Length: 538
Ligand SMILES: O=P(O)(O)OC[C@H]1O[C@H](O)[C@H](O)[C@@H](O)[C@@H]1O
Image (cartoon, rainbow, N blue to C red; front, side, top):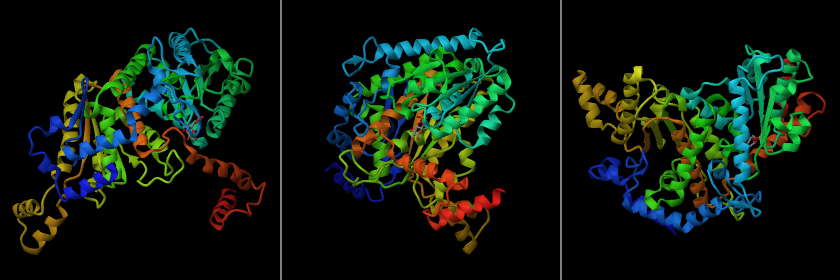
């Protein structure tokens, strides 16, 4: 019912402009939400009082609160895989937590964290040594998807805390990735973490084999295990692959891959920044969990971020959403969110097997500002498609000597949302052209190119500084936003069947490319492409 009411409300708004709503001096306060020292400003959107009421009603009808409580209490809300969804337990300081099969999950979570801490400290202090002595200078994390994007994003984000061994991330099955990463590293002082929830992912296992050969060449076979650690929920498979159990950090199947940064998948990050900042990040995630569980309605930041997302995608029909961190260290955030949001909510079948009657989650994309301004913002300002923008910016940077650069960064961020909202009318453009000395048809023609439609929505998340705790809050904010959007759409945000078909076909195509089978069953396009590769590669 609320869907219809919402689309009706949007229609009623007609050509209402955000700038008109902004004439209300109280709008910014009324249409923003605070969580401690963070502010999410969604006043530069067309969400008005009526829209917000209806969106909250929609969340109520979808049963977001009950579903949220079911998630936190360990019920198997991932119904297509029959699993609980408890990544929040990885950042729960306890003392007691959710129960799965009657068992409190926290003792194991905390014991694993302690083991990770011991191992990370060992590497950082030189207690955990390479075969030939000395210290580990470099750590290579081999993983893909959820076993790569989260820790890689966070390692970059927390660079100011990086005082441990150098961290490198290899994900792509393209040999170029591991080749270029290992090139220049010394195998005698390099530790490899093989990170894979399933420990079957072809990309990761292929890269792990390559890394093992590289290590064996330098240090021999006997003790190569001392240069490995594994992170997985398939502990039996890590043993089969030859990694000693003391070097294996396990996690339960109720941690989804793309939600797994908080536990052993974050091992590399913990080695890089140290256990204390890592635990601070967990505390930040837990802050957001507590907020999400207790803040009411429009006071709830993840809920409101989700509802604004739904307003833009499902109600207004904008197909994409740009994530624009004005923070170079968050440059991998858009890629991380692409998996988090699109793998979670890019689905067209509802939990009950019926076809979705509203669009699924949006295409998520983005780059850090100000780089994007000199590339694709043209389309955001003047293209025919409206792209809701999500800006993120810290009040303070980490480089006191470069505070003037941070001030410029912030000015650019705020100016963009202002420009998107305000735009520039034809009359204003004409005045600029007249000022430049143009007249007649030429003035008119040139003016038209300089019109900005404006009325383009954006949200801005501001926070004091990108610390480990803040990063934890930001990531958990997005996780819960994805959760709420999924509940409102009625889909299962925690499976990913859509990635399977391509994997199956790739497996079947490998022998065709190798010339072992003829591929007669393939379509003409695929056959032509196979033929091209076979004849061209020599
Ligand atoms: O951690 P792994 O089991 O190796 O999985 C790595 C990734 O591959 C899969 O194809 C899934 O789509 C991702 O959700 C997952 O994060």
